[in-house]
Length: 273
Ligand SMILES: C[S@@+](CC[C@H](N)C(=O)[O-])C[C@H]1O[C@@H](n2cnc3c(N)ncnc32)[C@H](O)[C@@H]1O
Ligand code: SF4
Image (cartoon, rainbow, N blue to C red; front, side, top):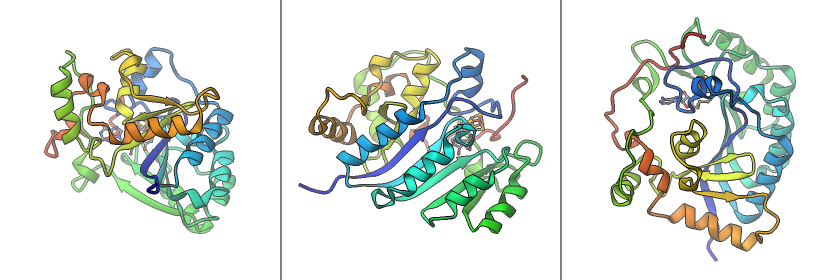
C-alpha cells in the first residue's frame, strides 16, 4: 500500500484569545458573545495525535492554532510531546497573534528542533504589542520564527477576507463545484483540523457549527479517540475524507476561498469589548 502522507493538520487548542478581531476566521468574538469559550483537554488532544500517527505515515505540516494556542495551560507539554514524535512530521507552525510574551519554558522546547517555528502574526503595533520582544527572545533562544506583517501598504496577503457564513444553504451540486475550486478543497492541500477528539476537513464547517450557523451532521468528522472503531476503519474514513469530492459543510460556506481576488479587509481590526 502507498504511504499515507497528509499535507496539513491543524490542532485547534482553545477558543480563548487575547484579541477580538472583527473578521476572525474562527469567529472568536461570537464565541465569546455566546459564552462558548473552552480549551480542549490536553489528554484528549494527545490521544487524538497518537491515533492519527498510528494511521498515517507522515504529516507534512502540523499547525498549532485557536484562538490563541499559547494560552493553553499544557502548550509546553504538547510541544514536548511533538518533539518526541518528530519522525511523524516535517514541520510544526505555531501561530500566534503577537500579543502574548513567549515564556522561557516554551522557547526552551521550541529551540530544541529546527522543525518548529513561530508564525508571529503582526496586526499592528497597538494590537500585537509583543512582536519585537518576542522576536528578540526567539533570537536569544535560537527558536525559529517568521513575522507576517498584516498591516500597512505591503500587508501580508493584502489583508483578510470575509468568512461570514452563507445565509441560505446551497445545493449539493453547487457545493461540490465550490469545494473542488476552493483553496481548502485542492486535493494536495486539504487542511485537516483536530478539535479535541474530532478530526475534521477544513476548519470552517466546524467553526460555523460552533456559532450555530450549520448543523454538526454536515461536518465531516472522524472520532480519533473512539475505542470501538478499529484503526483500519479510522484509516479508511481518513482516506475517504482526504479523497472526497464533496464536503457537506460547503453548503453553508460563502465560497470566498474560491476567489483569489476576493475583497480584502484590514487584518486584526478589534471589536469593542
Ligand atoms: C484564527 S487565527 C488563530 C491564530 C492566532 N490567534 C492568530 O491570529 O495568529 C489563524 C490564522 O488565520 C488568520 N485569519 C484569521 N481570520 C482571517 C480572515 N478573516 N481572513 C484571512 N485570514 C484570517 C490569522 O491571521 C492566523 O494566521
Ligand atoms: S487573534 Fe484575532 S484572528 Fe487570531 S484567533 Fe484571536 S480573534 Fe481570531
